[in-house]
Every structure is written in C-alpha cells, then in structure tokens.
Image (cartoon, rainbow over all chains, first blue to last red; front, side):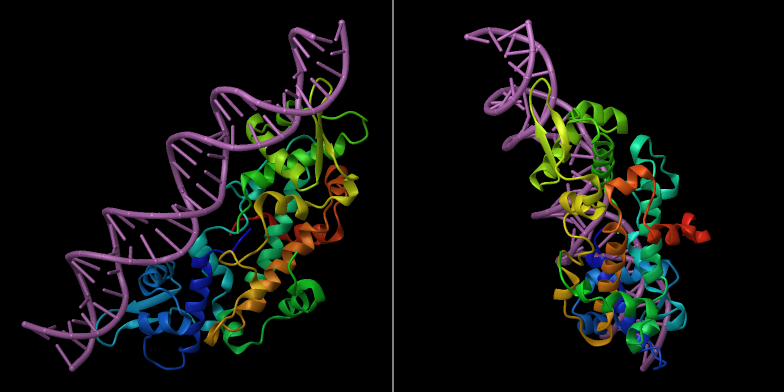
Length: 153
Length: 153
DNA sequence: CGCACTCCTGACCAAGAAGGTCAGGAAAGT
DNA sequence: ACTTTCCTGACCTTCTTGGTCAGGAGTGCG
C-alpha cells in the first residue's frame, strides 16, 4: 500500500519530459536527474524500463536524449506506475478477481476490487499534461479538498 | 501499491472473530487458522500485532483464545491494514504531505494525496460487521459495479 | 498441586525487492 | 577517430516478506 521511490522518480522524470515536449529536441538523462534530484544511474535504468514499455523513446550520441513516445495528454500516471511497479493493487501477488475467499471473509474480494477501482479512478485520470499544467481532473480536486485529506492518521 | 499476505490474513482472521462475537467464548488461533487456511504460527504473530494495537484481546490457557476488543461495527479494515502494514500510501516511506516537489513535478503531491484519500474512502468505511454481513457501504457498490472493475489491466 | 492447554516472544531463515553503484559496450554526431 | 549519450548486465547492501522453531509464561481444571 505504498509508493516506491522508483515509481515516484519515474513520474517526476516523465513530467519533465512532458514539459519539454514543446522543444523539438531530446532531453539528456543528466538534465532530468538534476531537475528532479534523482541519482543519474538509477534514473537511466528507470528510463530504460519506460522505453521498453513504449512510454518513452531515446537516441544516443551527441544530440541524443529522451522524449515521450506520445503526446503528454495521452500518457497517464497509471501507465507509468505499472511500467515500473507492476500491476496495481494485487493481493499476495495475484489479481483480486482471481482469489477465492471462504467463510466469513467471502466479501473481502469485493473490498479489494473496490480498492483497485478507486486507485484507478485517480491514476488513470491524471495525465502528464495535467500534471505539468496543474489543471488536475475534478476527482483529484474533490479528494484533496476534504479537510482531513492532508493530515496523517 | 500492493496488498501483502499479512494484511490479507489479518483482515480475514478479524472477520472470523467478528462473526464469532455473538458466542461469548474466545476463539482459538487454531480454529482461525483452519477456517481461513492460514499458517498457524504466522497467524499468531499477526494476532499479536493486532493485540498490541488494541484491536484484539486474548487469554491463554484451557479456555483461552482471541476476541475483538470492540464491537465489529466499530473496527474498520483501514485500522487492521495499518496495524500490520504501517501507514497507507506513503511515498518513499514518508507521508505525502511532507514531500516537496520541484519543477514540473510540483503538482504530483496533490496526486499522491488524492490516492491516499481515495484509499481511505474505501478502507475506513468498511467495518468488520459490513464484511461478515455482506452489506458493504455504498461506495464499494459503486466502485465494484463499473463493468471494468473486475478485469485486469 | 500438577498438568494440559493456549497464547506470547524472540531468534532464525531463505528468497526477493528496494535502492542504488560500477564497468563496459554500442549507436550517433562532428 | 573521438566524444557524447544511451544501453545493459553484474553487483552490492539493507530491508521486507512470508514464514518456521523453540521455549516461556499465564490460565483453568481435576
């Protein structure tokens, strides 16, 4: 139920790429690392994973670097998280719809399904374009405006 | 972004305790383990954690066993998950409200806050009583009735 | 009292993930 | 050719996950 450093880094780097999409030139890994304060070599591994998932493209050499494979408003945060962390809200490493619960826990399956659906409702709605513009989808506004959304429990 | 075996086991065992709350006698660990098919010794460690968090009580000896410290409709799934997994939706092991994002990732904080809020909206609404009766809160019904809530991505 | 029963506790363990670092190779540009 | 930058795999340390094992300590009963 936590967000890994890798996922956080991946989204941040992707946000930088989204912002740079206007310029017609690739962005170097080093610049991404500096902009978001991420260890360079670790970041390059992450970018490679994003590339393998078709989210990012890259070119090597002098004028090389990374860029988004698609327009920023077509890439969701959910995609990026899945690329580096794997499936969202799996239970014991298996998808909730495949689990059979017995006895008094029978309805737990529906709860885990609801958990996954609520995560998707946020992560699949927010695109990289939303993220850099700051114009987040309504659902984020609703969720973050509840007074106790910003306090720990 | 996944649910550990421990959290799953904990909720299932707690559901059994909730169902047994009518009988005025404690439930043995062995019975819980069998009912939910959980390795006994691992389960006892989990129950101990729940006890330390004031969710469960226990007595040793011949007529000993475990029981819920409070009525089943006052114990939420969120409490149980926190007891065994720690805080929900932390990023890089720190709460999202404490993170400062720079540059184009500035609004990522709001997204993680929304993620946490949406998890809470489910986990803090569902009580153990809901779970054993099968009468889950409206929000769960809404989330699970979307057609693609039950399919993988 | 003694004994069985059950929880309680800490030590241990193997495998994997998290969060990196290091060294070298392979394309691209000049 | 040479530099630049990505690409790749190996390696590393620490922590977490998902357990098992051995023994201690409280409780109830005959």
